[in-house]
Amino acid sequence: MHYLRRPGWAIPEHEATPEAVFMDRRRFLKGALGVLAGGIAGGIPLAGAAEKTAEEPADRTLNLYPAKRNPKFTLDRPLTQESVAATFNNFYEFGGTKTIHFLAQRLKTRPWQVRVGGLVRKPKVYDIDDLIRAMPLEERLYRFRCVEAWAMAVPWTGFSLSALIKAVEPTSEARFVKMTTFLDRTVAFGQLQFWHPWPYVEALTLDEATNELAILVTGVYGKPLPKQHGAPLRLITPWKYGFKSIKSIVAIEFVKERPKTFWETVGPSEYGFWANVNPTFPHPRWSQATERLIDTNEVRPTQIFNGYGEWVAKLYPDLTSRTYFT
Ligand code: MTE
Image (cartoon, rainbow, N blue to C red; front, side, top):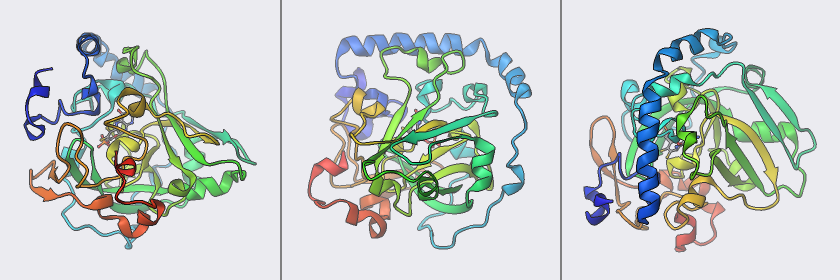
């Protein structure tokens, strides 16, 4: 890969993606073929996307937006322009570029079920609209920091993950919360890349998941979540790199052992389980000292825990250990 020869900051963001972990040539070649195949296949069904959307049942949560803003969470920067946030996305199920917003419209987000189970007393399969209507929706202004060193500030609408955890009553054995994205290769052509460990999986410790900051997001900019942002339900953990914030969740499972996550499987030395933001621990191939705001290109210093240490530093006993920051 030619960009591997350049210094970290010379890496264009569209290349400096988590997918760019393929250090060995064979994997890279396979990846290039896959992107090509995805691109060709991706071009064909675009016309069908409109038909698919037309078939979708109505979203029964529309009247819940905009939700009341929680004033506790304030920003140190302006909100990112909505049109920029909505057209600069990572959603590898739909391709490896930032401009997957067209292809993501292929995903049908109604009807949608979320299976919540594992080590809980009250497992339940939720219809997405019933779930959203049952939960206390609020808007929060959060900073968002991608491992690729770009950043945005966004008004998410959602509910605290702890509210759902409370409803299903985890048993004392539950230590981790594992989340899984949909798997449908007829819709998401990126999932045809068989060498990737689909479906996308992420996980938090139970302590992280019950932290006040962890939210399940259903909307943004005062409206239901666009598909490219991970509709109808995604995670946001603002103190961690963005790849932890799994999109389009279909299952939430409480487990005893630490799950192997999608990016940890692909590149463990670059995209580990903890992934807490820290400017002093560079990514193996680029610095994390600063971040670029995606709409203004302003460059700002990165903050430890993305500025949310007040809420979460207590979860990590050794702040000098690299373990928590990869
Ligand atoms: N979730 C799934 N299922 N698939 C993905 O490719 N990308 C992650 C995260 N969640 C991703 C995902 C990464 S790398 C980032 S930076 C954020 O989504 C991007 O979120 P955004 O597109 O809403 O800004």
